Image 1: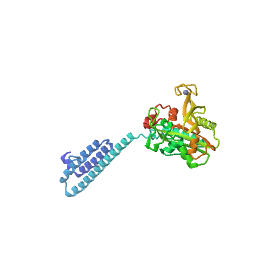
Image 2: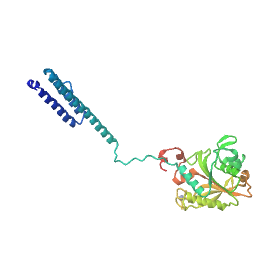
Image 3: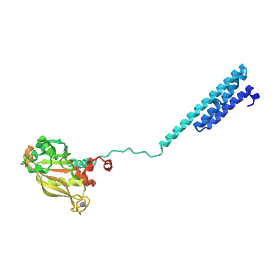
Image 4: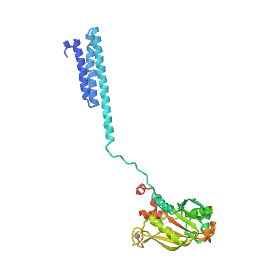
Length: 349
Ligand SMILES: [Zn+2]
């Protein structure tokens, strides 16, 4: 700028216009905060263009000084406003960039992780469903049980050698953690008093036993049918249908004489191996059959203890271990997997 130019007010007006236009152009193209900041320093800073122009005001007479001062202030306000808007614009752009980096709206949605039913729940639901379809009503009984229901009424008096068959958890002399679901049979017969009785009961039972196939807490399902002239062939028919529905339509059963205090006669029930269909494989240890449950005709002593005349009624009962069925069905080798709550195990079902 030459001194002779500066004294002309028209020149000052021109410079102010130029400053506005330049700032507007530069800010429009600015892509970073640094670039906007550079424009701010150049136009409005202490040594910036506006300051330079304002310094010259003293040279002009009062009238013109007033007019030019007003124009200079307007130019300053104009540029300040543009700078603020530019910062805002850049910030908005940066925010959008961050957001679009985190959320790719074209990606397929993530499925929320859903819970699974426990394999023991799946197994007992399956078994109970089959029994319900066969006409059995579901009943429940307490897990802390009186000696009478768990032993005495089931034909296991205190001096009976069968008490040694089970390692019992005693709460006190007369109270135990039930060792089987059979006490529910006694409770039901004592409360119903009328035939026919057709019940199934599922629940936790307790024994002092622990290894890869035994757990101190496990689950049993019990079935009881009492009516006039119920026979052993009714039992066999029911169990045949039961294994067909629970395991495989091709399943057959085989009954071997056995002993339980509360049934007479008693039988261990084997099922034809569902993996090899009786030909023999690793699962059935080459025998073609798998031991699956215990059953028998209700012992007359049990009827007497439950308020029924064994001359007038007859019935059958059977009990099955839920863990055993689940291990067979899913090919699980260690019973402890069921209770460890390891998601790698549970998520497979
Ligand atoms: Zn087999």
